[in-house]
Length: 365
Ligand code: ATP
Image (tube, rainbow, N blue to C red; front, side):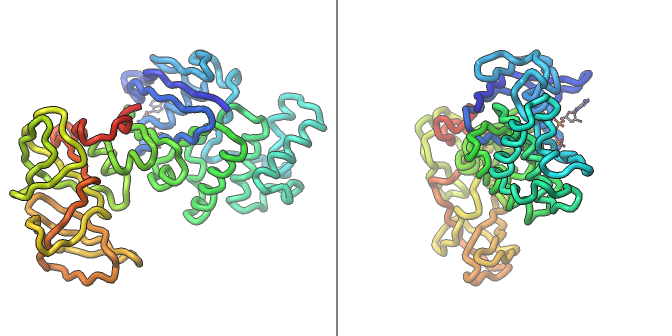
């Protein structure tokens, strides 16, 4: 187990800034996910933690020791690549034991470590099999076996499930998290898949264009996104935004949308006036006949137990997740009720959440 500290780390390639000063701490034994769209700097950040890339600025600490300038081989960290090449001419036992053989471990010790890793991964019955004939999931387990056999302080995983089909991905997500708990490891996991991140992480860092937008537990990030980018990136379908013009006084607790006062979760810290985006997730929108906030149904998507109903209002489109048994007609006029303790308010220009709309500690950390 290890604590990993990343302090204002930046990386430029020529004139291009791929990572622009990111800071976070990964606690001992936690499962930390770096989430973000393609090209946001996830892999570069992970490669710097691994020692495969030298930061242009900033420091990386492993258990308090500054390892910024140390090569990968001098850091007790295992990197699991997306397309982890197994040696096809070797069997499972030889593949898993390979890193130990390279380091000239004694035969008995290799045997014991390989069998322990295989037991943890529940592939001990496959040890004498050639890897060529294994299923995708089992090959992934062998690759993981090769990473855990050295018992490193931390595991770094770059989209390790990317090559698997969706059914296997779900299965392996559960297995990876379980494995992490069993071996008491510190894991840093990269993905662009928000569902994977939500399912596995203790904490998530959402990255965008080389910066960390927000760090928090999956629930903090889902309930209290610190920016419209995060609100839009997380959730399927994402948060809906209503454009509102409001004038807020310090201590205000409600805003007015089309003359309808809407109570917010927290009071505002500062005076603010202008255009805001009122964010609401589909499950926090319901139909309420008497509501003055009205719109017209423009579509409904059936999802089995629920349906996603899209309503167009004077302030923009809102999606509502309703029981699929509720009869909804395209074109009908409906009143909308928004669950007040789950609303977010963003500055429409900067896209940042108003400070008062965040839980203490739910912001950058
Ligand atoms: P993906 O999921 O697509 O791999 P990512 O979030 O992991 O995306 P990075 O691989 O870290 O993103 O890349 C961030 C940016 O830095 C990209 O625009 C990429 O083209 C650029 N980049 C990465 N490595 C280099 C390099 N060696 N030289 C020049 N540019 C690079």
